[in-house]
Length: 381
Image 1 (cartoon, rainbow, N blue to C red):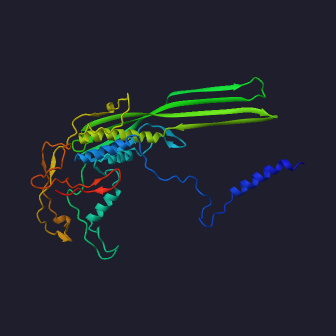
Image 2: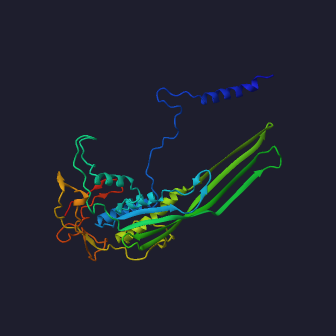
Image 3: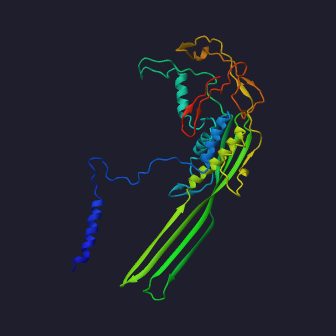
């Protein structure tokens, strides 16, 4: 028996056994060093610069959009893979929150209410403090629960991912070249391309009247391509087959994010009343304005005047200037806020003026810069 042909196999077996070792590095405690190491980066789409431009332009003009809430934007395509699960992201609502935040639109949370509900329950039980001396130690000022302390939304955005169409177009080709002699080299090259698309439907709903005030429908095509080449030859009685290729597929979920950001841009432009912003990227020969349709004017219903100071309530104590609610049996309903029906839309320029001699409640609202994530608060009037 000849041993020489077996030596490469034995060497390969030794290498594989070393790779399969269960020993770990004493310095790091790791069995294997993770590959990669790419840094965390931003996740923009082609519409992201337009959203940030819109926020900066609105801020420079002194425009404030009404508050929005984001509801469910669900996957309604019904596309499901038994091995990998759903084909479409389940986080489209989070895409919408990020997009509207990049556009500078004020938002209120309506989806994840667990923490807010727990905090409110603790505050109503008079066991919650914002400045306690320590857990279980001396209590601090009790957080009050006041009527009207939660900001309301003027509109809310809902919808769904409604289409996922595979292979709406495909094309490809193969080319092989070689001599008739079986021992001569043979070469081949080929390529293919396919197109699919995904679509969303959005609607903007009036939080007070529940009227659908605007609708939008967008679709985006997703492109995939593949290029391959190979060489086959017989050299000295040894067959050699060498092949290679490259393929690429545009990220499907990033396409959904692009659709959401397009809808958020068109929505924010109308909420600001700023159709002349000029922030949208220009695409020659492509009309994108037909996706959004406002069913009525998106104007504020009026300015809400702050309520007068409530009358003293028996049983209300004060800690460090913060009132604490009295027992339920001793509470009195405060006078409701007065809705001043002034025909002033949210698209007005300049600072918002006072109402009945008092500053407007949103005149000193903090603003989050979508480009730097810095919070700035304008000076109060």
